[in-house]
Image 1 (cartoon, rainbow, N blue to C red):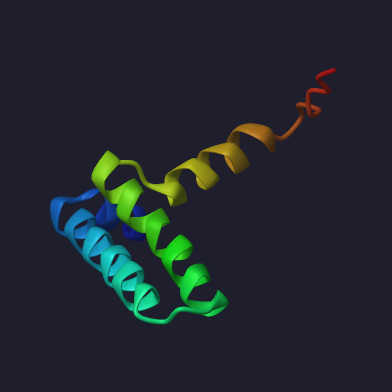
Image 2: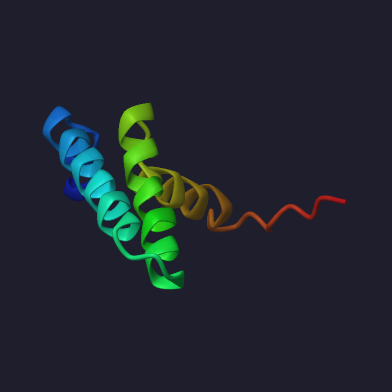
Length: 77
């Protein structure tokens, strides 16, 4: 996936942190439920960008590992 490769790059991480922090700042200027939601949503790309992880990779890996052809899903108790 080219998008996850870009998001893992240095430029992608910087853009994610910038977009996340701008959502946090914008949400902080609106003292309402909408502002709180924007701040919480903005924390996700900011933290994942700082930590160097990509949520698209995590979702893609979980889908491909669980759906192998010929292998039933594991049932864990």
